Length: 186
Image 1: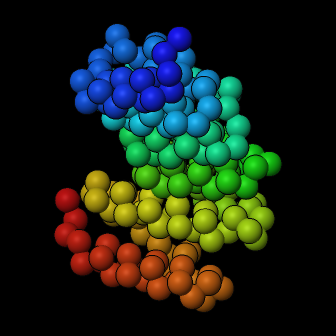
Image 2 (image 1 turned 180 degrees about the horizontal axis):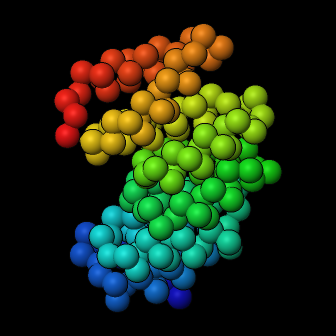
């Protein structure tokens, strides 16, 4: 029965010092609106325990709109590879912002599975999502390249550098290609 301000304060403290024992209480707050939701989401995102990421994943089926997109952003920021199957399904969500947030999260996660999901989804995506999916693919390629997965990064950069792509996508992909080529093989 605490006020929203009190709940927000406690969430901020749990973001700094919370543990797996804090997760159920924070997960329950994901069902609230406004500042309490944001504080709980931010606290769970900051916590390193797998239970926190699990709570974020489990909340996806209960949320919609901007709140669901926020949780997707958190999963991306956590680079939660276990979220990839759920994120793949959300790439075709009827809410464009949710689909775009799922793509961005996959880009941040940056695994081979995430890259494959983005490539398939972008080939079928509506024009309105095309640039956002391309941006996610570029982010994914950066993550793969940083992880030493040069071949996987090149497989993303090459088609994005094609002359049929928008100019800004081509430019970013060509820069990525150059970085990949300059990178020494591990």
